[in-house]
Length: 198
Image 1: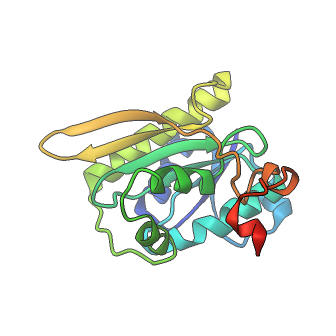
Image 2: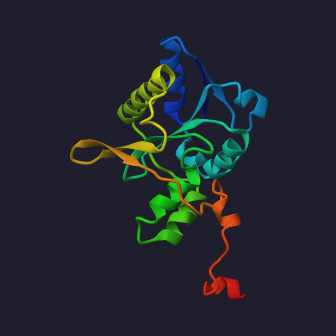
């Protein structure tokens, strides 16, 4: 199995080390690696540092264009850290769908979108990085060994409170996602939709 790992998070280096120890061919990739290099991997794990979070929207568009399957690993943002979803272009939600779904669950949607394009100063700790690494390696093995159907379109959230909590969440495609859905380009607008009047 060949796994590429993108991102400068400390977790990224730990993921490469752990997968290599298990016998996988795992190596670091740059965000701007040539398409021919990226598509040679069976799976790409994207583990951005907090400063690199704004790069995810462009990476998502690129992955959709090139048909790259990728697993996201998001750093702890004060609420949770995330492993997954595993994105399969044309079959599952994309990263932008993930953001739309998250934005729909907060009262400050405009601020949420502004935060997606702002480098964050989130701190990290070694114990959390090791937990994330373990979850990523297990996910990669589940995908490689049995194409586990539970992985695409769901993510695991690690919350650090009085207790460490792990929960699993489904992320459905957004029907009118401007990045991965063609519905918005084909379905006519309703005549009373106010934007169609202008």
